[in-house]
Amino acid sequence: MNTLRTLSLTLVLLFALAACAQPPPTPASAWPTRLVLAQAEQTDAPALTVHDGRVWAAWIGADAGGVHQDAGWLDAAGAGQPVVLPLPPTHPFAQQLFPARDGNVHLLWLDADANGDTQLYSALLSGTLAVLRGPTPLTENGAWRYAAHADDSGVLWVVSSGGIVSEPSLTVRRVDAQGRPRIEEQPAVAADADWPALRPAADGTLWLYWLSVSENRVWAVALVEGQTRAAHDITEAPALNAGDHLESFRVGQDGTQQYVFWNLTRANNERESWWTHGALTAGTLPLPERLRVEAASTSPFATGFAG
Image (cartoon, rainbow, N blue to C red):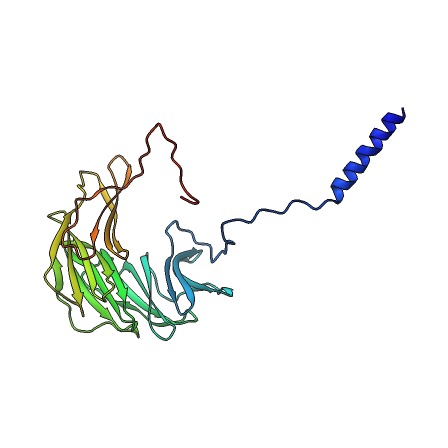
């Protein structure tokens, strides 16, 4: 009986000590604290740029009154209040942000004009997200896709494809740091061309890439003050069969290599990514190959954090 009483007292003391003990520390997460900038009724990622110590963002919002363009920013102190931009929309999409001067940023997007044709527009936003200039139309003959680059002075160079849908051409436009486009008419810099992409080289040269519609090849040319030098084709593009759809075409670089990427959807809804690369000074690149990770069935596939 004494043994049973002793055992019961021991269990009570153990439970009491366990209740007083400090809980084990929560392991630190490798992920940073999540910061909600805004809620948006869309799946597309927002447009982003880093400028003047801030991360700027723009996205398409919606409410009972319809769709609108929104913008916000965050810095080391936290996020600012999102703003609904007074830019009358129809169905805006393909937003991009670029640094300007004096703490301002350029906003570019595609939208329908009064005739229902898709055009390219710009606006200049202040540090308080006020619209200083815009919406300013940058095209008149339609715009299907575009690429842009801001130089160190805040001047924006914009290349867009437009014209006849079956025979698009590329046009270059200059937008100054105050959001004012060059007035004079700009001739096309490339015919039979679509999917423009820009790569600023380390030496300051701005390289323009595009896809030749009829040849299904990639072309490249140096772009100097809006003028092109001798263009040359650098590689073949992945073949697109009936029902296939090109989702995106991008270029990039690191310290020694230039890269070209394609994302496409096949007719059976299978998604594929293709790429090719070569030296920064290479005049031609190898044929593209499908980007994927293959592991032998006899060995386990291991990936790092967030791989």
